[in-house]
Length: 129
Image (tube, rainbow, N blue to C red; front, side, top):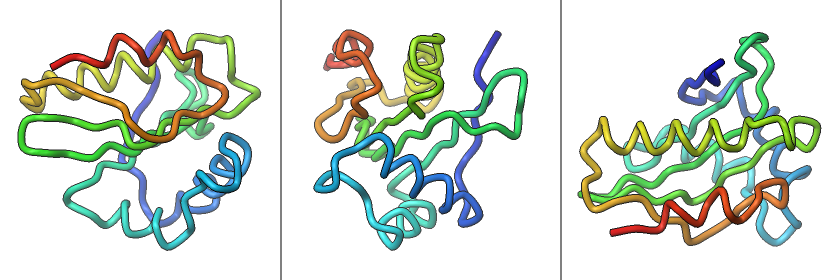
């Protein structure tokens, strides 16, 4: 079973705003405009992760910043109702594959917002250069 992934579009803003409210404290939440800018940016990749068997059911998202040789996980979040089902690990696995396929040879790092619904050990192995 593999998680379904697609690029976010402006029609995803309602889901993304809901996810921000449910996953992050107020001071870490992205605004609607910030999310919209990210969706339209060439520097960022806003991904929607969907349930493997229910393709139209979004379970989480990630905002990735693309640098020359490095990929930064700016934000990663999972809806609380999908916690402890393996979706978080599938999201991290996808990001690792994405980094490899897109030649981010210096690695992946995380320095910003991790949803309270992610276990830190899921993120820790991503810190390499």
